[in-house]
Image 1: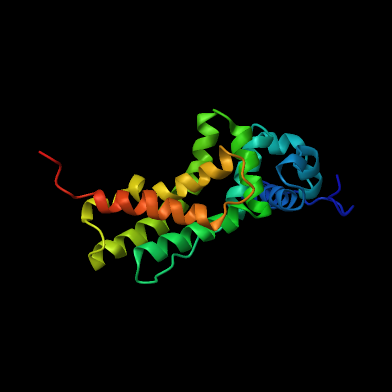
Image 2: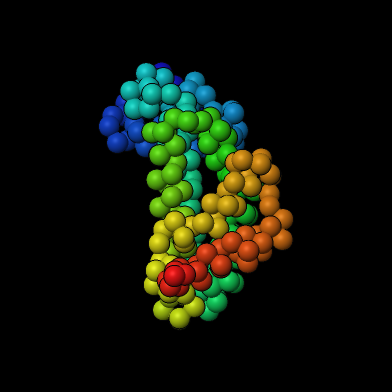
Length: 203
């Protein structure tokens, strides 16, 4: 067997082979998107056979999700001293990412996963944990500054703005979100929700 450059393939097992397959799949996603990802092309690029891939991932979608998780990067949280400005900057970072070729891969993967809970969970593990962390951090700073009550420091509250932005891409199919949409999400939904936490209920 030869690799994609026509060289004799090295015999690899275990973690080394898995690494080669994931690297090949990530390269294919970067170059061709999810639509162009095939087991044949990944196998050729990794210098292995399709059976070796199927023993580790049951199909193209599972492999695509694993490769995407490798490509996705962690967002660096802003620290402007203002919850509003931090939230807007986080949304703008997410908007730039989801408008990029990598964002198109994510949208294709979400669409392909459909209602498959396990595969959606794998995407959500990555996008959930990685996305929630900076939002919880900036909200925690706002609590420390007295901009928000401690009761606001809840994962669903913290990530509500980015979930609404995700809907613009996944549900509405928008290629990007105009900045005024981001401002509306922050000013009309996110900040009122955060500020409403910890208020005494009407009696």
